[in-house]
Length: 115
Length: 115
DNA sequence: TTTGAATATACGTATAAGCATATATAAAAG
DNA sequence: CTTTTATATATGCTTATACGTATATTCAAA
Image 1 (spheres, each protein chain N blue to C red):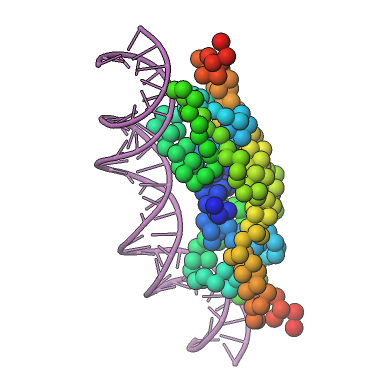
Image 2 (image 1 turned 180 degrees about the vertical axis):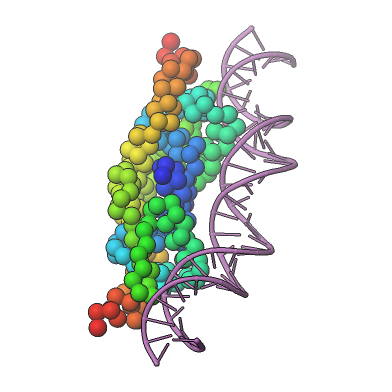
């Protein structure tokens, strides 16, 4: 992936919020991201698919749920940029809201699996 | 400017090469950028205009030449991202070529002004 | 093996981006 | 003035993005 292609991944608000939320939280399933961002499921899924196809994210199915995370095998130059992107996005109101909705979410899959 | 808007500025190869070259060299006129990137003048000018309009670059006319530089009045979160972008882009072949063409350029305005 | 929840994809459409070519403006030189 | 160099913009075109809606797929549970 070229630098410009990487920045294009971050150039859409929905994708940027997904990536930075994953950078902060580690691993989230589609329904958690859908709840956190308060957007339609197909919209989230389509953006996650494009990020998977370009290699920025990897997915893993666990039962009914498909979890996404940042690909740990990315080129070295990408990680500091993702870090700085998170630092920048953490200053925004929408990211604060996203985090709040995520943490207030009922029936989060991980919680269910623990019981 | 939102983080996503900022990343959109970097998401086009031509704009990214302009921005990183300006980050490294400080201040360049349109004809220097045109030579360095080996692209058409209208193409460079159009991208510089869009970067000026979103506030990422500022321009200043000096005689015949219009110089562009990174806007020093940008929000704080932007500068580390530009730094990391340069670090990433410096690893690419095209950036090496851009720098080489710039430094080999004949009749660079600054040099002419010095004599 | 049917039902429901989670996720993915297809399709049509609206909008935005990017490009090449041509032309316009602005300053300097003759 | 007229020309030349540097830069900006307009126009017409093609392609890419993003979206909503509808539908398909996958898994688990009953």
